[in-house]
Image (tube, rainbow, N blue to C red):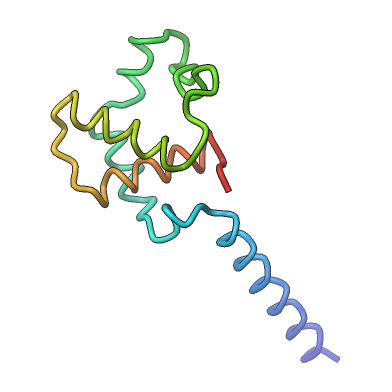
Length: 108
């Protein structure tokens, strides 16, 4: 009986992991979220957003439907990278966008 319960629990956890991965846009599936988090902190993205929109800066994440796909989100991060001359590599831009998707947008 214990083996059956353990097997069922393992199967359920595996299914949940696959389901969570399937809900991530293809563009962000291999993104390094830890790297994205580190880059957001290093480049003080939140402080910049606060200076632009006030409050906690989160209002910048949903500007009247302007960013409505994972691709547009990544493009906006690339725009910040270019305008601010951050020097991020493509995989770093994707990592930052993936974190923003996870925390704010939740595109599937």
